[in-house]
Length: 241
Image (cartoon, rainbow, N blue to C red; front, top):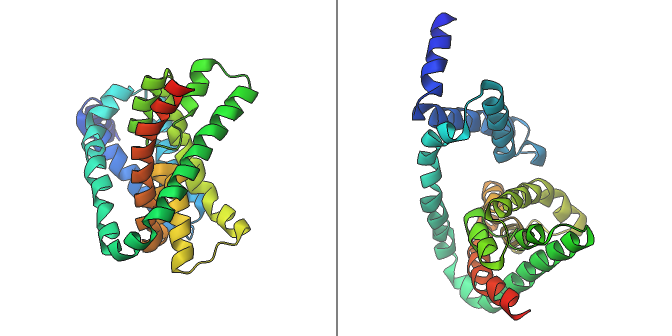
């Protein structure tokens, strides 16, 4: 036991702590997700976030100390997003046939996501800056922060809203698709994945990729389209209106 305490003190004071904790917790969460039969409530991202947050609070380890090690995994997010392009390349023929419909769906989905969030914030009487921070909630967090800064929102709050939106999408999509009776064939999986990527960005795309290759490919496409469209159109829309 004394040796374990010494090891904990050493790890908690070095960048190795953040890296080790993240890897161990995520692998454990992934194992729990598999044992649950891939139940939505056991989403490994959600379990990992909750476990790491509770661990940091219980041990008194500061977030900067944790992130000093976790940044090495954070760096891999970029290559991971780029890797989503490979499934799309394998399906380039069908994408050429559907590009018009996919673009319209991306515009419609992104517009509804932003307008509904703004309307809900306004109905609840939220402060103006908070309402503006809700607008890019369905765009991946780093981009949402940049958009929020341009339109007068709070970047840190936009990142929180984006993360919550992604988790809700990953947790609830399976049940929503069942209610809507979206089929489980290739076209149905494409529709599911595109919807997840549109509404729940990277977390939704990761969930779709675990469920089905076609769903994951279209989720990655939707994620990329939302990044481009939201970055161009949201700041322009707020300047005009």
